[in-house]
Amino acid sequence: MGLTAAKTLAIVHNKPFLGVHHLEGHIYATYLSEPTLDPPFLSLLVSGGHTSLIYVKECGNYETLGETRDDAAGEAFDKVARLLNLGYPGGPVIDKLAQQGDPQAFALPEGKVSLPGGGFHRYDGSFSGLKTAVLRLVQQLEKDGGQIPVADVAASFQATVAKALTKRAIACALDYGLKTIAVGGGVAANSGLRQHLQAAASEHNLRVLFPPLKFCTDNAAMIACAASDHFSRGHVSPLTLGVESRLSLSQVMKLYQA
Image (cartoon, rainbow, N blue to C red; front, top):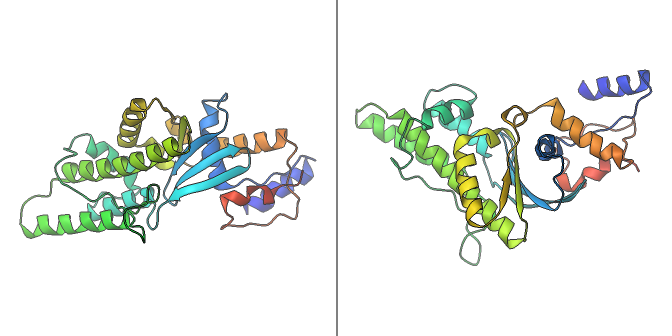
């Protein structure tokens, strides 16, 4: 419906039509507050559906270096919130409760991904095991008959996610010689991630950029920002463009004709 509406507006008003990759929009959210940001840089994209480390080489040129093997970070927040009967969406309420709890109250797994030859993947992660660990923790606490310390569980969970994302982002940036990490997606609003990543980055003289909170979740401004940059480079989309929900970020330029 959105695509049809956009094409109709372009035709009626004789305006150029541009399709925008949703994930590219999240990358461009940073430009809304940092218009002078120049590639290359590392994008940590963390949302309800995606958790990726993306090498931003230039407009339309991206390489995914790491990603989650199962649940996205935002999805893990939602599922844990459901376990704790906190409602949906889970990110904001867990973040609020975590500030009242002890992040070291419970030891939870960060979700490392094993390599065939031994060791662990430096950039890929997993959150399904963490979610299961919280489930078992809650079940054990209920079995013991005591009141569940929801704030402590939320704080421990959030701190574990923040540490896992921070560890992988810092390693990736250092390995590829990238001095800036730009964070995008709904989980970019999380205070625990902001604190952990900023602190770790400062130890390695890395710059971390977070969009303003209103631009972390899905919004029209980030999509327009990406479209504007493509248009300034002479990129427009044909009116025959269709919807491709599974289009890889590395194939963004399929959306345009120079």
